[in-house]
Image 1 (cartoon, one colour):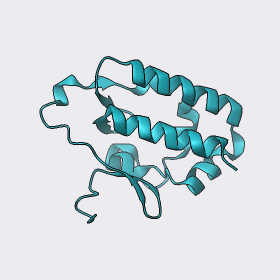
Image 2: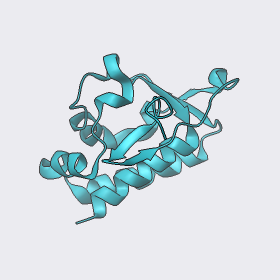
Image 3: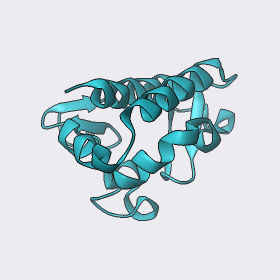
Length: 127
């Protein structure tokens, strides 16, 4: 996949990405995901290390395993694991298939956010 193809993908590792799913014709269906992420915000805010979300959107965040491990150092993994499960359930149950986050300056298909939450949860419970 070329750099152009990855323009809207979310990097989760050196050569690992969550691919963008086209939203053409669905932008007006977007609902706010920020409230659904609840208790994950302390972690997500610590991942905003590359730039500011208002400037770079998801590219501002370090969603790599190493980035998440560094952000977890002063956080309660068990609490975040529970918060991640709650967020995944809330996102999966939401009526729309398109979400927007004003805080992260991003809009994505539900499947993208679910993949990201699954990745974050694997990092939380991992070694």
